[in-house]
Length: 287
Image (cartoon, rainbow, N blue to C red; front, side, top):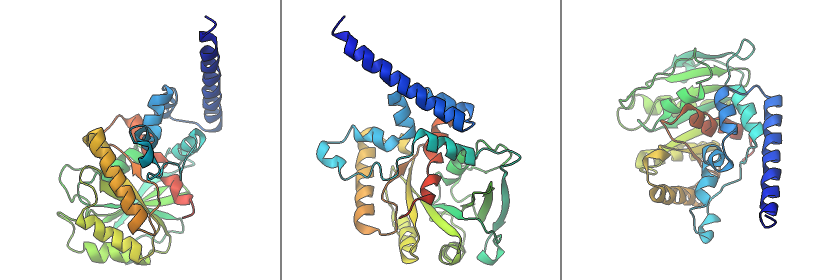
């Protein structure tokens, strides 16, 4: 019994620490039921859902861990709760579809910062955006099983914070005027603050992805690489892809945020929300 006492005391201290953290989060922000349930998960499960890169770290050899940027952006639970509040619709925080455009001069003229999502057809872009707006049920984001469903730039207001832009997919079944539409937007949109470039983690960076990356680099845009479909690969294949893409970011990019953001779709709504909410916090981080 004496031998078990130190471990028991440590466990009790940890329980009190977690309880205190949950209390701070709940007092500071009105969290959704889904997020509150995630906060109550055991620490290991919570880490897997909230910090997927850190969960992958345990499967890496010690000499490979230094190659992976894990905590350049390291939000607290309070940060995550605040991010969730950005996406929770209320009378004081209106979240709504604004308009669509096929040319930049048709786009709404808005003073708020903008973030845009871009990726090849069928990478899971619309599914990710739909998950982000799950706390704003009146916002309709159409998701199709057929690649190339999005043909226009779609603008969504996210409260007083920023505008989110869903860009058409490139590659298979891309709109005929894709290059003129997207290149002009990326080059000339003055209030564009961050671009989220989605890459399929199963296949890695493709030739069409490289074209999008070259555009971001040429126009000196700050962008983030989001790895989708991480639930579609074995752990070994996913780790290999993550390390290869991280090496590419480290060696061949200048404007890309150094940390990768893995997401998996479809998954239970709680997982999707928590994994993706904190992407937008990085839009406020300096390069």
